[in-house]
Length: 164
Image 1 (cartoon, rainbow, N blue to C red):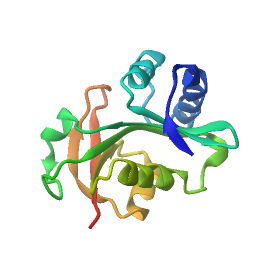
Image 2: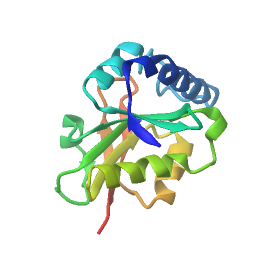
Image 3: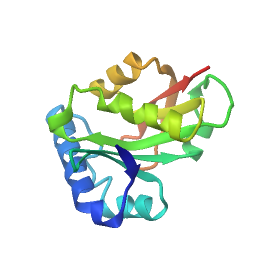
Image 4: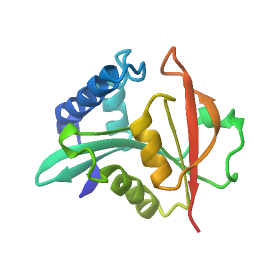
């Protein structure tokens, strides 16, 4: 089940993010290695009703923040598939114990269905091979490069999926 996060979910969410940060560090990625995302960012997402958690057998196993727009995506070195309204997924992470179980796909499918959108945009670090492969398996299209404001290593690969 995927649901909006509550304030009392914060510790479980941060534990999942810490696991993801460790996996990224072990893979020599700079993404999420600068105290981001931190509890302040996650708490804001919860209060803004933008953060969702994936609950399985009573445990939170995944987290993602979902938005209807991102100003960063206004400046792309490349071209989006279209200029339709879109949803954005940021800060998506899974518990290490669930890797390889297609949970990322389930979370993305939830966004398409829950928000009744036909377009999702998402970005990731060029060295985040697991996320890149997941997006490619789900038929996201690489559209170009964007630069995030949350990291000194700001270059991100931008992906877009449009469903008919």
